[in-house]
Each structure stands twice: as structure tokens, then as C-alpha cells.
Length: 107
Image (cartoon, rainbow, N blue to C red):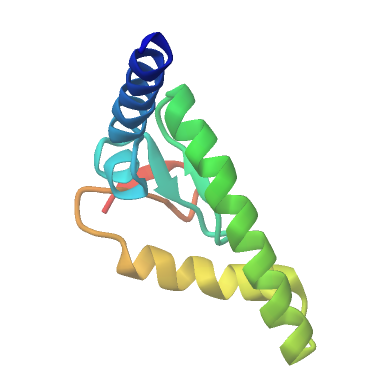
């Protein structure tokens, strides 16, 4: 009986933690993350949860860019740069993007 209560409690805690996990859209619309010209996310406003999310997303992007680069026999940096332009263009108004001067601006 005690094991069941502990298991239910642990499961509840796990579910409540994941319910509060920040989504990429939340991080962007809250002004924590923005799209960089390089094709990766950057930290606009310090937040540890957003930074962790950024690192995970950037790692996935890097892997995806590498696959595309190998397939098309171009550099990963060129793929990332093209992706950055598309991501900035697709960014919702009010979210942050890296400006030409390297500073964050609201779109």
C-alpha cells in the first residue's frame, strides 16, 4: 500500500514538472529566446529553463543542418545561414530576432 502511494506521488510530481516545461513558442513569445541570423536560437533575456531548451533545440538543428549539408555537398554553416533567414522571416510579430547589427530587435 505504501509503495503504491509513493508511486502515485512520484508520478504526480513527474507529470506536474512536465506540465510546467517551457515550450519553444512560450520561450520566444515571453522574450527569453530569439532567432539568430546563424540559424540557431539565442538567449535574449536570461532564464535557465529557456537556456536549456535553446541548447536542446540548437543541438537538433545542428544535426539536421549537417545531414542536409552532407546530402547537398555544401557547408553546414551555409545550410544554417539559409535556415536562419527563413526562421527570421517566419518569426511571429512581437518575437525577437537578431538584427543586422547583431542586437536583438522585436519583429
